[in-house]
Image 1: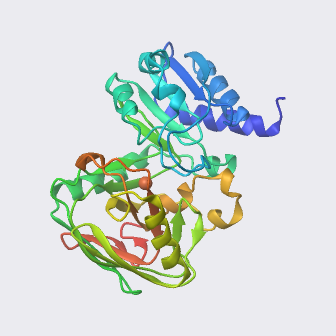
Image 2: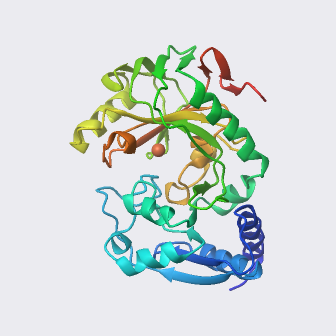
Length: 343
Ligand SMILES: [Fe+2]
């Protein structure tokens, strides 16, 4: 049924697809699974059609290869039904733009790289409607994240400190800096709406990370209540100590039986000024992936598990979002005490 919420969604998806530079006559595939939001499928379909694109809505069977619930975790393992179906992959490769409305997306599935290599751009969407609308990107967001990428590309060391006791030194050589800006406008580009962040994939980091009260553990979507100290050497977490959350992290690492569970993965900082740190507390866990936490302006976001540039395949992926850190690249502060140096 077409209602007032649908009007808002159609407007937001239309603005989003314009940012993705969707042009008249291009081919769009709206990819969904039975558990996807039907109103998002309709809004993406309507937005693509209104912009003059050819549009196909493709619903494929649900079912993930990852050994964890598909509750918008951000693990991005893809769907078995696409991973095992050449016809589905060919459809996605033949599109100019895929609007990926599946519950987890394909970011960590190698097949996504093949689809992007065909020139297809992919925009992944799964957060709640007002989260999408509040965090609608702006074309200028890409300029801001690209500045961060160049800093990382030319830098050699990133240092992260905090009043809580974090002091981490990260080697940036060959760390493959990347960004997310909330829209996919270049051929072969994947992005996530909403997001505005700079990240890299270092191999070696040393020191300690101290999680403070109020930091956010993802995909659990839980706040840290008691400080946690993680001792890191050579990009590996040697020891986790503290209270209840330290226990949870240790248990997660052990239960995963994954050789890369305690290895650091991507890390960087958020630039999304419209993000709300309390979204994690205010929504049901199935309503959010948690991009407000992941991309929050001035956060330090780091993660564990998979590392595509070191050929580490792993489903044991945690993203941990921290407030109050100072992040510097070769002495140039990009985040000072949890605030973006450039406002
Ligand atoms: Fe991640």
